[in-house]
Amino acid sequence: MRQANPIGMGLVALLLGGALAVRGIAPRAIAAPEQQGDEVAVAEPMQLLRAGGTERVAELEALVAVELRNEFETTRLDLIELDGCPTLTDWLRSRRGLAFEQTAAALSRDSRVDALASLSLLFHVARSTSWSPGMFGSSEGAERLAGLFRRWLEDRAEEAAEDPLLYEPALAAALVYGHVMHLAFEGNLFGDSTASRDRGRAFLRRLAGTEGGPRTRLGIALGARYPGALARLERDGSLAGFTEECELVFPKLDGECGE
Amino acid sequence: MSELVLAKPDEDAGERSASDQVLFACAMIALGGILLGLQRQADGSFCGTGWASLAMGAAIALVPTVLSLAGLSADASPILPRTWLASISAVCGYAGLAFVASGVLLPGGPWMFAEAVVLLLVLSRRGREGEIAGLRVSRGTVVWLALFLLFRLWITYQGVRHEWAAVTFDVPLLSRLPWIPVELARVSLGDFTAAEFGIPEQGLAFAHTVALWTSGLALVAGGLWWRHRAGIEVENDRVHDTIQRLPGQLATMVELILPEDEWRELGLHGLSERQRKKRVVSLTKERVLRQIEFNRAFRIGPLPTEVTGFAREIHQVIEGYAPPALPEPELRETEELR
Image (cartoon, rainbow over all chains, first blue to last red; front, side, top):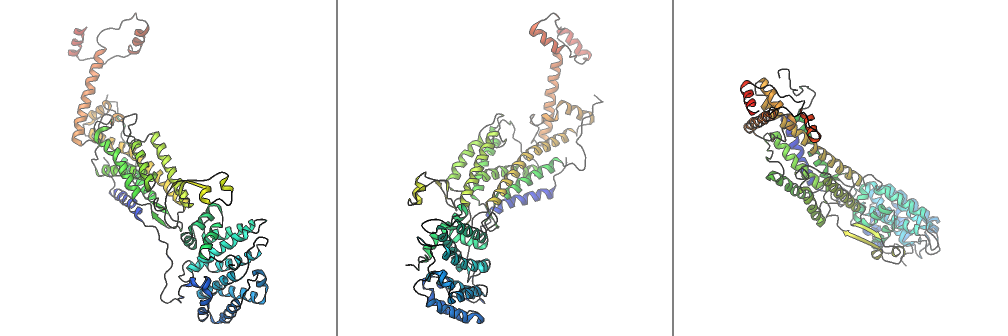
């Protein structure tokens, strides 16, 4: 009788052991990237994006790149003087608004701290201007604001998922983008803007990697932090989950200066 | 008799031996077990499906195996693994059954136990041939396994969509009213949690995970079938080797008296060398005696010629048979009987 191949038997035993061992592979935990010793640290970066963040924005001046420091300082002071809840689209057409847009764009493409400074400016503008369509208005303001957040996310989202400084702010930026686009979609009393929803949906799906392939790092973080929002986006393409979450995390970011 | 030559196993170098086939089948089962033990996370990395379902599958597989080994099946003598190959094959057979059970069961929660009870009953019931269903897969067993697999895939799909219930549907009319809370407008049945069903925090890549599981199940099922067939061939080879130790023509005669395709039914599988030899002698003796009795029946006397109906039909069947010529003493005995 032919003898069994001992190498084959050993291989089968190994495979059987493997079949048992693979079941114990633990899922990869979702954790924010850890701060490295030699990186520039900004304590509690999310404070800069919340309602009281303006009190700390001055801290960033010393950390912002020298060539952009003056522009940042000027824009910051312009925003402090921004009162009366002007319409975003009108303000962006003003001299100060144009300068703000340029500075925010330049900062978002620069260093990590500059990107954080840029985002803090965007949040400040989102709180201090009127961009909600309201009952009879148009979605133009919401579209313009979402466009600013979108550009920041396009510039920084990919690396932000692995950056301890920008990790949380990037999640917040994605949340606000979804929220603003949802408000743009809901439009005014007389109709919805499906084009806004479709664009918002397409961008967020690309950002999170929810279109069949594996999720992006930011998508995984977003799903872990705001599971309801991403689930609704994946399930039926609705951005309503972003608004629900955003109303909890940034309560007065409603496009009407919280009034 | 001397012209008769029995077909010997081909010695073609390219042909896989039965023992190699058993090894391939076992490798398929083990590889299937690996695929069934993995799931792909949303970020593309892999993680395990956990031990709970495998433990439950192993417990379920134990029952039909023990019932079979305890002689409750139709097999009078259970087949024992006599070689290393047979031992590995037996382990793989049990593991394969456990992999299949764990592959179709939900990986946790109370539903896993409910499914386990049903699966246990399905796998332990006796088939038409008296064998335990888990060891000889019947159509009913396959249907049950397929249903459980579909249910598992459905639950996983629901989990991937963050729908934490087996079924969720909108209440007609109510769901169309914008001021009705979602809790009232949607009804969920069979709630579960991600942890219960082993869905990782970051979610699953559903398509890849389903592909892994179904490929794994196909490998295990194919491996179990192949192992069964190859196992019979290995045992037949062992019987053949024993018979071929007899001197030339004697071995040929024994293989004619005991045809190879009957060896399994005759209980020649799974025996030690000593037991097998004794069994071959016993079976040969039994068949030779039966043949003598058979031939003797034809020498009782001439067949009646004027018959009709049922008797005529019998006559037509047996009139063409001519028993071999008898040696002188037996011929006299037959004459006396007449």
